[in-house]
Length: 123
Image 1: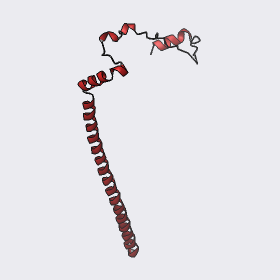
Image 2: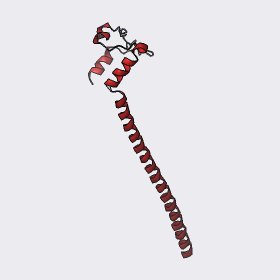
Image 3: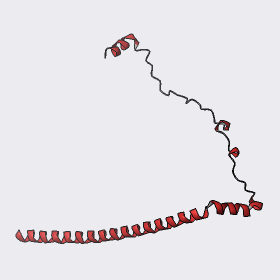
Image 4: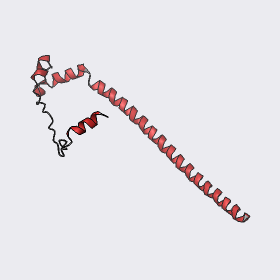
């Protein structure tokens, strides 16, 4: 009996060691994948900040004004005036329709009579 317990204990220790070994490698793999993703995120943030700076540079008002003047014969771009915008009172909105209520299974309460009213009032 003692031999069986020693053998079972040894097999349990070997099984636990194998499980711990496998978990260690899965953990290391997850950590390396996490570090990879963190690097990708850092690269994306760097690229995004560069694109934002480039967008701000390309949308400078003086540059856009010069481009509009250069391309005026082709595009016929005009500066915006407040009179070009409409007023909210000029917009036609569709009428608001009341929702239609449909009763599929009406309940007839006319047969309850006054006795039901008095029973309900006493509660």
